Amino acid sequence: MSSTFDLVTIDSPQPDVLASFWCAALSLHETQREDDDRWLVLSDVTGVRRIGLQRGAHMPSGIHLDLVCRLDEFTGEVARLVALGAGLAHPLRHEPYGSIANLTDPDGNQFDLCAYRP
Image (cartoon, one colour):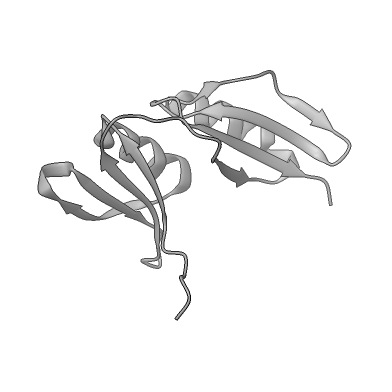
């Protein structure tokens, strides 16, 4: 039997704050909560588990999420994510292949918003 992918898990000292951020950012909703908020699962509208949040020390790593949007939505989507609590880690980049925003969630976990050219 081989391993299969379940979901991305983020360790956080404040899982409720991250749950609010990621639910708003990606239109997810909480589908599981255990041990007083030590473990939360966020799912999409079809019930597919997407992000797990586990109470624990924040440990930045080289792994990050890539979000995508249409090129004509890029500026508005960056503004929406920042209004939700994201931080802009680097200036926006506009490359031949599209636009990239390097962002951080409220715990400092890095993620990118990518808008690729067709």
